[in-house]
Length: 192
Image (cartoon, rainbow, N blue to C red; front, side, top):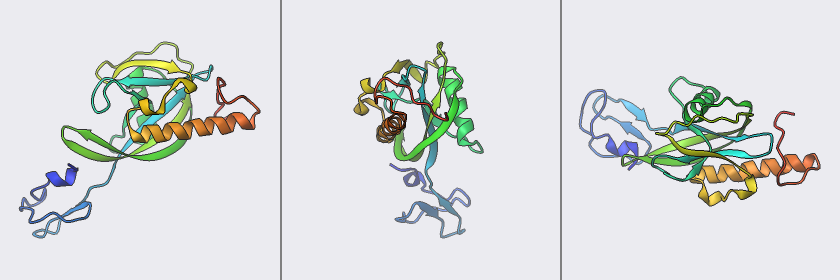
C-alpha cells in the first residue's frame, strides 16, 4: 500500500477522510489542508578503483536482502544529494570517494513494513583508492570489488539499480571507445 492509503484522518484538524481521491494528494474537505505525496529521494554510487573494478555491497536487510547493490541510501530533509552520498558511503562502508559525477535518475518503489514508498533514485559514478572497508553490519552483509563483466544485471536488488547499471556500462563503454581502449578490464577515467 502506498503512504496515502494510511491517511484516514486529516493530520491538521483530525477530521475523518470521507473517501480517497484518485490523485497523489490528501485533501481535507473540512479544513482544506492539502498534502502531496511526492517521491522520496535516494542516492547510490558506482565506485570504481584504479583496476576498473566496481564496489558493490550485499544488502543485510529487506527489501532486497542478500542482493547486490551500489552503496547509498535516502537523502535527509535539507540535505544535498552529494552530501547524502558522501554520508551514506562513510556510514555503510567507511571510505572516502572523489571524482563524483551524476550518472542518471531512475524511479523505484521501496516496500518497508507493509508500506510501498515511491522513490526517485539518483545514481552517481565516483572513484576511490580505498583498500580497507569498514562495513555497517546492520546495512551491509559484504562488500567486494567486481569486474563489471562479472556482474549479472539481474543480481542487483532493485529495478532502478538494474537500469542504472546498464547506463553505467554504456557510459563506460563509450568513454573507453573514445580513448581507443578495450571495453572490458579497463578503468574509466571520470573527469580526466
